[in-house]
Length: 331
Image (cartoon, rainbow, N blue to C red; front, side):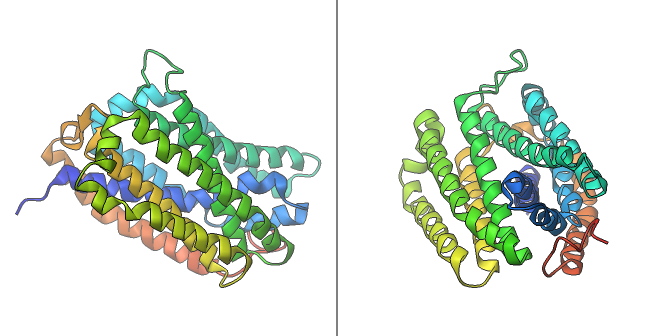
C-alpha cells in the first residue's frame, strides 16, 4: 500500500496551523487584552504568563510556511503574491510585539510606548492572520491588485480571529494568573466569547451563501447527515465555556476554548477539501514531486518530535501561576 503523500503533507500542514493558532493565539490574545487591564501590575503578570513560551509558540508558523513552500510550491506561488500585504504587516507586527517583550520591563518613561507596541502588534497580527484566511477562502486576491485581498469577508474573518484570540487570552489568564489579574480574565472572557460566536456565526452563514462548493459540501446528501452535529457540538462547547468562566476547574474554560477553535478549523477543512487553492488547484495538482515530498518527510520526522518535546518541556517548567513579580523580567 503506497502512501498518499500530498494528503499526508496536507494533514501535517493542517496540524501545524492548528497548533500555531492555539499556541500563539493565547499569547496574542494577552496582547489584545493588554490595554484593558486594570493596572500596570496586572499587565506585568499578563506578560510574565507568556514571556517564557511565546517565541517557541511561533515555531509552528515557521514550520507551516516551510511545509507550504516545500510540499505545495504551486499553491505557495499562487497564494503568497496575492497575500503579501497582510503577511508583511503580520510579520512587522510580530517583530514590534517581540521587541516589546525585551524592552518593556526595562523601560522607564517609555513603558507606555512599549505597551502600545505589544498591544498593537498583537491585534494587528491577529487581524492579518484572519484576513489571510478570508483571502484564502474568498479566492479573489490577485497579485495584480495589491489590495484585492481586502474583501468584506476577509475583514470579517480578521475581526473574528481577533475576538477568538481575545477569548483564548482571557481564559489563559484564568488558568495561569491569580488575584485581580485572574478576575480580569474572567470579566473579559464572556464578552470575548460572545464576539467570537457572533463572527463564527457570521462567517458560517456567509460561506455557504457566497461559495457554491461550500454550500454543496455542507447541505447535500449524504454529507448533511454526517455534518449536522458540528453546529450542535459548537453550541455545547460555547455553553461549557460560558458556565465554566464563573465556576469550576480553572483549566476548563481554556481547554474548551481550544476545542472551539479546533471545531472552527475542522469546519474550514471540511469546506475547502481537497483544494490547496480554492477553487482552482487540488492538493495533488499543487504538490511537489514524490522524491521531494519523501526528502521533506525525513526532515519532518526528525524535527517534529524535537519541537513537541521542547514546547512540552517549556510548559512543564513554567507550570503554575505567573505574577507581576516573577517570570521573564521579574527578577
